[in-house]
Image (spheres, rainbow, N blue to C red):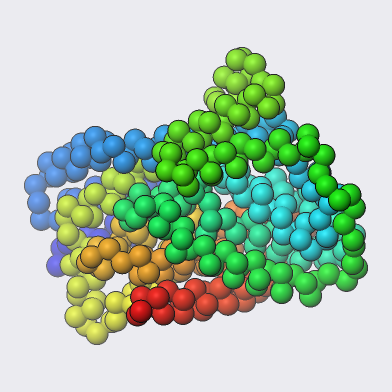
Length: 397
């Protein structure tokens, strides 16, 4: 019984500490220690599991990858390459497509609250199309998060494949149909917001405008080809420096400016939590008790991720909590049950009023948060229903 109480206390502590402003990695580490101390094993288990986590190659791969993602995003922003590419697109694409494309492209720049970067770029076009503040916020938030289903170099994808053990190509092949579902939902909903039509301008981008997307395409292409993620990101960063004509001193400044110790420590702490859960068996005891009381496993896999996604404040952190908590319940690896966990976390995170992208975009456009949440919630509900049916259907084949 103490194991079950320990798990409940550990995950409650994460949210208590986060509410008090404690860094995510510290809160996760405290939760892992609580689980270790209440698992019934010797206290030395805490240090043994920590040593296992720190010596695992997957830990170092994940930490290096998330650090490099931040550096790449920072370098693209500082060199102005992405800005120039976006400005070029604005003269080529039709209005509604442009409003969807700009936030999606900025979605490659993985950073907390990154939607605030794309908001100024969609504003002139949104004004020309007659969008109200709430409509602008919807476009900016919804389409920024399209790449959760397609991007091999996002921190959420890297976290998901590291914690689940599925190859990145396999993972993305299963997730990718939901990219098109999310696009369709966003365009159907967003189309109702547009009151003024606009035609595209030039027939082609200036070749110089294309430089901003080259580092991203290289990183994504190399990863899908089988090159390790960290190596693909290094190529993308070096390409950014070359195309942006950044010298050694400027490159050093960008690497230092883009490096985030908090993100790296958060990634390591989530792997420590995963390893502690597996070593202790406490979470299995908790959910065994729930299932024995008549709660279906599928219901647990649906409800718990949505609760975590709604309060986590970060998609990758939500994945980092829900995957170690729930995947041990499925026994043999099951990519569709795992994807249902990912789906629930994603949909709840996009809709959450704690979502930093929504908070910042809402403040920028001075929109009505209640209306924004209604738009996002209805779209997320549609995405969840389609995604759930998709995974249950394929799992039953």
